[in-house]
Image 1 (cartoon, one colour):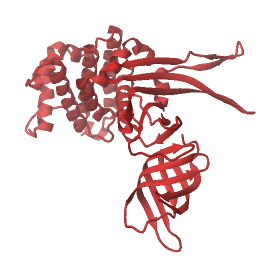
Image 2 (cartoon, rainbow, N blue to C red; image 1 turned 90 degrees about the vertical axis):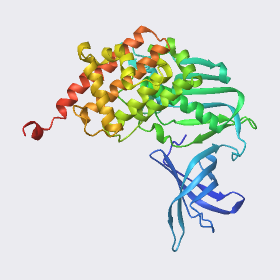
Image 3 (spheres, helix red, strand yellow; image 1 turned 30 degrees about the vertical axis):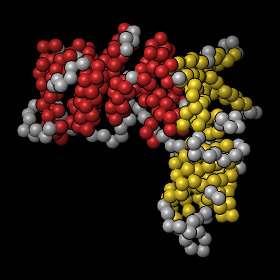
Image 4 (tube, rainbow, N blue to C red; image 1 turned 45 degrees about the vertical axis):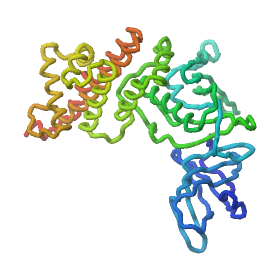
Length: 410
């Protein structure tokens, strides 16, 4: 969408084209800013709409433009940061009552997930390219079709030939939808992708088909929620989960229970700078929510929920079954210490251990959700193996790395 870091053009306020001013559009670290001497006589911190025309981009409608910097003197300087940018080749976008049926998103997270590889076979002097992907998924209840595509694009010059894999999501609705509905459909998929693969990224482009002129209009906004996301959680590649993908995607869109659990999981999977105790509390809340919604044990205590998930917890943690009751009692004491302020509780998990108890509970929820949707045993076994890798082996390695020599020898 923005192939350069800097564009030149002119901007003005709606219905005030006589205020047209020179502007530099900067695109830095995924954020758009407008550097200009365009100013209003009114004392405001945000302008709802600014219009602009830029070389190499076209007509841009900037929405919710906050003033991030202001300076007066011999010349006026303003730096605006718009929340949304609508880009069209031929016209400005009227956002009031905006509706469309089809929109397309480019996102390299799809490329990471599908993991298709191209390579050059020097022995036979030819390029080997894996097959493209184009799979359709239908959610009849919403009148919505989703296509997942992975294809390749190339560029050639006198110095190099570049072959690049590209990933796309194409949404098509039977009925006209609003922009906010489109955002919601896309965000649900992003959460699902984070859950199933721990791979989400900022989209590279987001475009919809204008119902009036048939032209493709692009929109840009910064996805702060999914920026630099990643976690020590479930990692399932596209081909591995393909047989179950239709069921999982449908559940992500129509199941209130699944969407609620996804939202709770996202607090940890996308959270930044969370303390270990905060992460543990989030996991307790997610674990209890999953059990109330899926295990159907309403008004039960945490101990009951842990016992209902005994098989999955033992499979992931590899703790001795004899120690299970003591283990869950320690989880409960730790919960009471951090949630209910029972600071007199003894024999609770250390701050370091809380991190891995949190991982264990999140994996247990993920495994339970996938079991409930009857995915293949092969997939379930892989999730158990990944959970074991984190809870047992990663914890063991990081415990050594985090040892404090002064504490050990005090």
